[in-house]
Length: 398
Ligand SMILES: Cc1ncc(COP(=O)(O)O)c(C=O)c1O
Image: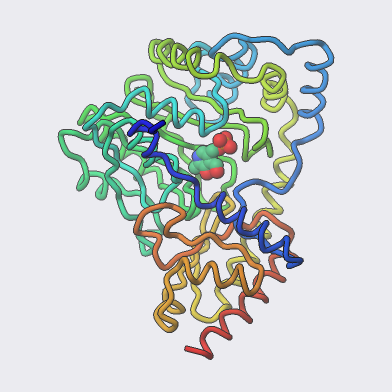
């Protein structure tokens, strides 16, 4: 029973493997502090949960329309029209998917053929590059530089395009660095894409977690229907990671084709979860103000605390709930790889911090770890103190 070549291109997400390792360490009685998890620690707001319960009780449990229930497509069209300033998105320009990940897979599998080149940020969310390889495409990595705030710049994109470039995958704001592109970056990248007939797959799932500066969506370009696949989801903003709800916005003709993909892949997204998603978008949004204020406090605290650790420096990332601290000095002094350092901190201090390499999944993350600050400040403080001890011990021995 041999696997297909395509499926062998897919790899486990290392961040999930770290969670398994953390569980194993915890099973030995260690109180594990995790900076590894990419999901908000707040529960799904009550009014959203209630909507799902109501839908279940009313028997809304059958198959539904493959591209999504009409009221959800409409709610997404209206919400994103206003949020991004696009203004006139129509329900038939939206398809609901099983999570943001489902949208990534659908978008790449639908547009990439063997030999196509796809520009991918390095470091980056691992699903992009292995799904490109799954489709027979070639990921072309652009290293993000700490000195540029880990932004993807038009200059770097220009240097990496070739006649074979079919798609640019832009994750903005960015996992794992917390960076955010400027308006000029976005405009420059979109200009290059338009001039060269390149599709832009824009993953904006962290668009609400902004602490400094102004977020700009690719949907601000009035020509978006010609070349953009916009991707978003409910996991992060509404704390709905387990609900598996995402979506793609693009022109209506493309949505028809993506619907054929959906029918053959998952038929439709969970019916009662979609009812809850309508309420997420049309119901009160104030709960997020508190969430954002709390994350800002956590970010400020975490940045300062990590910068006080020996051999560690970290940028004050303007967005998401991630930081990407540079630990190169520790590695130089101890001769360890990033992964060995991460494992040592987990095994000996019970602190989870996925290493930049191989978690995200290429080369540019070597010498960095990802820190997710989705836990109370008290807990972050404990984690940092354990790291301080661990690093001091390592440096003493070096
Ligand atoms: C950049 C990015 N895109 C997409 C996703 C997937 O989100 P979902 O839970 O909706 O599949 C994540 C989750 O961590 C992410 O970081």
